[in-house]
Length: 156
Image 1 (cartoon, rainbow, N blue to C red):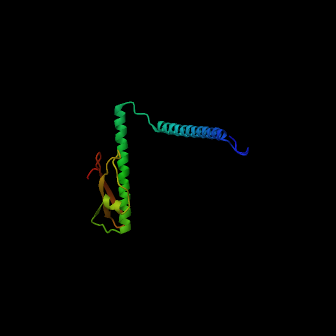
Image 2 (tube, rainbow, N blue to C red):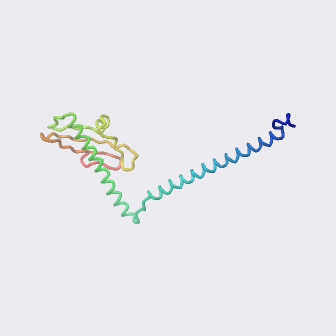
Image 3 (cartoon, rainbow, N blue to C red):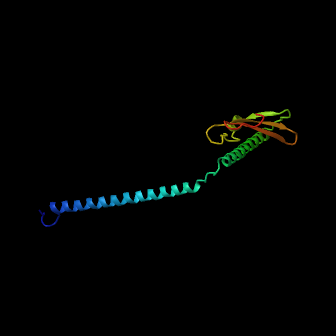
């Protein structure tokens, strides 16, 4: 039915509405496919990055054990040096007259923001420790001691 030949009839309006809904569904489908392809591409890139970061395991168990012990030793030696450097900064800033010796704990150095918490090699537990500081007149001598679940500095 047409109204004075100047507008759409009911039949025309239903056809145009159905066509508009069909086009909206096509656009929606295209957007969903595009989104999924982007997600797949980024997940493949992440997976490839993880494969690149993987290291080949050692062929022999004995070599792996030696390698782990060397890594463990290097890791904790670095942590001891961090503790020594933090204690030295603490002593210099506070101008300690530690001629007889002074002991500063890891917690004090952490709370005063000279260092961050020390974690064990596996990264699961926090380690304790302290540093002995002795003023020799010209400079400070610092010895660091750390105790973790799988390591303890000799003399702790």
